[in-house]
Every structure is written in C-alpha cells, then in structure tokens.
Image 1: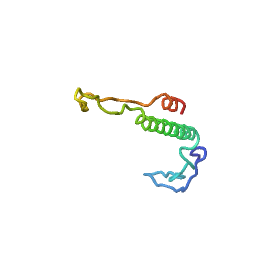
Image 2: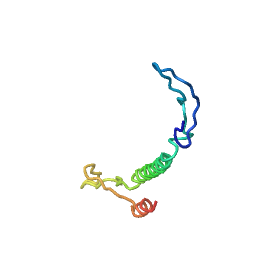
Image 3: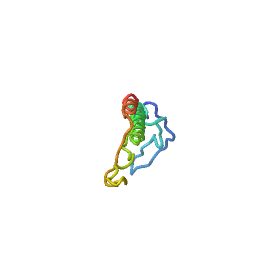
Image 4: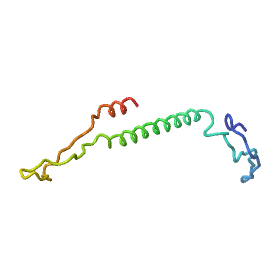
Length: 107
C-alpha cells in the first residue's frame, strides 16, 4: 500500500470484516517530519514568520525603552514675588531628542 511520499508504514495486519476480509491495512505511519512534502514549505514559512515577529517585538521593546529618555522632566519651579518656589508653576526641560529618534529610526 502506498500512503504517500516520505511516509513509512509501521505495521500491516489483516482485519476480518463481516463475510469478507480486508488485508494490508496500514496503521501508525509517520511522514518523517512536520507534514512532509508540501507542508515543509509551510513550516519554513512559519519559522520565517516567527523570526520576523520576534524582530518586530524586539524593536518595539527597544523603542519603548528609548521613550523614557525622551520625556520632559521637572527642572524646578518659577519663583514667586516673595522669592519662594511657586509649586503651581513648574519649569520643564528635555534633552535634544534628535539623536534618540535617529537611533530608533535606523535600528
């Protein structure tokens, strides 16, 4: 019995069925890999897809880590007329984000 390319029969036996008998029934065959023939390319496609997805997720993690460096930070507070800090008027600053943006875009 031919059960397809790259397939191996592991056992043959005869089966009695009613008045007749069926013989040479193959059970427990394996294809020698994931799907054999045409599915091998699907397996390779799946591996490439997984690698691509890993690359995208790695890039996203990198971008999120770099975003912490591109945040406005409180440097202090404006001074009130009495020369006391006015906590209602914070002063913010940010480092030049261009090198970080360039790094993310070229990664």
